[in-house]
Length: 489
Image (cartoon, rainbow, N blue to C red; front, side, top):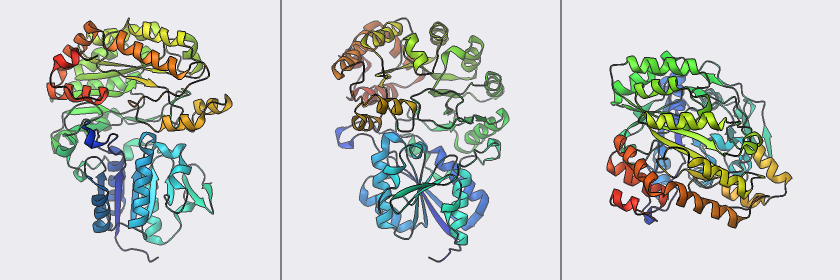
């Protein structure tokens, strides 16, 4: 294969529509900031020697035929595909399409799925040529350089590939230590107005700036699919510089902090908020990824509110003290209760998330979580999830050791979080798990007074259309009015 003088790179967000559009479910998609980071890095390194195109299965593609047409027309030499476990089947379809339509292209897959699902993504003649494990900005540039030079990308660090039916892993890639050195995501490559017509990570219908102010997480929860434990941060000044740019160039005033844990360093988080407060632009801030409640202070909440907090998600998971230790989250439930209710009292939309179905969790312990939820402020949407046993996690290993139905668990792990699947655990039957979910919905989410308060708060920050669309997304049926939600049973 000859070496190119100019390289075309097609970056695909394979987070396809999680429902059949014919069923009328709202489309859900968020600007693929990770891919835009890759595009910016390629531009900084190679200038006009590289031409990059970014497409999203939900926003830009309406059919398999259209995807194939885009591939043929652009004719890239390098295809990079982002994947997460919930959309693994979509990713595999895109990989197979790229291999068929673009036989001369190098097909590379990255994202969280590559930590544990390499076999599904790379196996066989229709699998991806390479998987990238870890930060992608330097990796994509090195892969591009290998195409320019004719060298083998399989010699790079942080690469997984298949050789004669066997997966081969190169030495781990060192995480990027200086996050400020990474160029900002190139939003000019996407149509923000098209994204604003889709429900996003913040459950709004607006142009969103996705701000990742840190990478990795120093904690060790056994269920978490984020295996990057090298916690690194951007400077507050760098974070604000990106926000300024997104506002000035694209008119964005809604910003989602997508960190795994925004305030591991509380002082740094406060400094970011102080800079936002001093900005002469009114913004709306969202923390959809789940903030740890027991390390959040009233002072931090007050600064978040003053800076423009609209939505804060608190991840509780379980109210069983034994399980908190077992899953290695070790949340102080009393502190968490106080700060969650304090946040709601300060006028913010609060989303409380819980999980059921942990290994060893009994029905009685699951009931503790429901009873604890009754002592919390209303949650704006019914975010109660089935515990997922993602490959590569300690919880998946526990499942194998306990001889649980790993195949059924794997199928559950590939589903989107709102698609509740209920494989039995070692301590609860599927029937008991279904009972827990029904009890949660009846006693917590659909309790009339709680739901009324949640909707009132929701409407303080969101339009009626956004609220109706969000509840349609979570409950699986369209609503024409707030009263229809209140009367939902």
